[in-house]
Image (cartoon, rainbow, N blue to C red; front, side, top):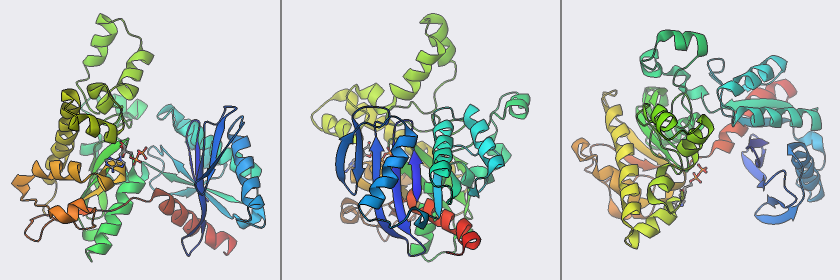
Length: 390
Ligand code: ADP
């Protein structure tokens, strides 16, 4: 079972492994409300769900009732997406007491994510005591980033004492799409160099050198890097004290502005959803046009800066909601990369094909759908099957 728990939601996908066959998937949203939404295989019902524990109990009851499983002990492993693994975890791990305590402790660095992730692990281990819990970290893939790329030019003691450094996120997705791209291009992943662009509501770019993360745009938190749906991405740090001193805003309000009121939403004033902003730009809204231009510029700036790190680029890979579906954004970004001699095949780009660059492009450009749940299921299976002989 692959689990992605958020503050008021829980996404699930049950796999038959090692066949990688999806048995059932869905999402429970608005947990904590009398009108929570429980969708299972795209059929939704509304019911009262008090908390995550009730949500998980409800899910398991439903899986039995609808005959997706005959007994609870068919679920031998539960893989949880965990936002922050800090410097402790450079790979997925079975969660026992020690690991659980570390994940909870890392809530200091990811207060919106790790506590709910930890709660998911706790509840599943109580409700399904025979199952093994596995944590799959968003940060793990980026633990190979060298110190000169992960340190901030702040006093070194802030890193030593408080671990203030770049961690990077979306690691599972960057690694997955780069591996699929290497397979597709018949390259050895351990020798391949890619620049991967995960462009969803949250967005990040990753420089992958010889199969390892070498740099990435998100930093100490998932707010840094490129402009996103509601997050600003990297901005002049002196804007924060300015807002505090001159506008007398408190730190919570400043955080809210930067994480929830900025990005595409902040500039366009229309929406955080790329499709809405694009529609309004098409209807002539100037601020929406500027928002899209800024979004594209930030991404191409990162891509271009990462090219200086690589002797050879085997491919630029687009993934996640916008990366997989917006031919327009891909074309706009690639137009900014003409100095790299990147050329798109218009038809293939419009069709969201896998290889969208033209034959005479110096760098290959690919569209690879991400599948974080599958990675969670595979890592979980790998760690669990030796122990329980499944
Ligand atoms: P999340 O980060 O929440 O997982 P997704 O990866 O699902 O997000 O991406 C959501 C984004 O993808 C939204 O901004 C949405 O507008 C955008 N998106 C989805 N389909 C399209 C499309 N056909 N064209 C442009 N943008 C799209």
